[in-house]
Image 1 (tube, rainbow, N blue to C red):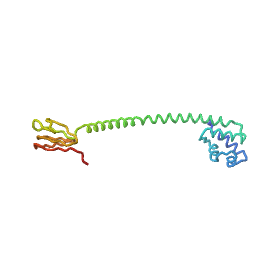
Image 2: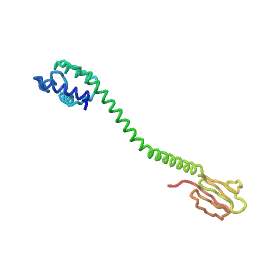
Image 3: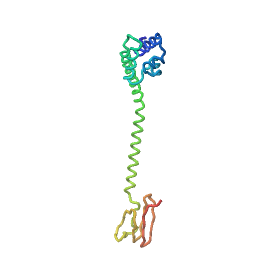
Length: 187
């Protein structure tokens, strides 16, 4: 099995640090590189901003007098990990596509429910609170003779018997000759 570039890089760093007479702490203090970061490099973990990693590798190359081009190995390993990341994204995309259908169904269903509720709301908003229909031939509402009328909030003077149908479809029959009707919202 072929070793990856970052594995080779970490092995070179381990070999050179172990063969030097310096401890990891001494190298860390001398080069101004965090000890944990150095330990990560020795473990093959090159996470972080590229500019810092390149700078650290150049310092390590000069300090430990390493012949191999550490930055090139780092960049090669970064290319390998980019390919791995691309492959992982492709696999994740394929997995996400199988879950796409339920989301689409739920989205269409929620859109349908929203439109239905909007339609019902507008229907209720535009419908009158009370419909009045004459029992006899006609009735008079506020001096106007009509057979049928739609009433919203307000006060009305009615002459003649009529059927009142509320917005909730409850029907009330009034057989008086003259009366006052007050329509208002209540809590």
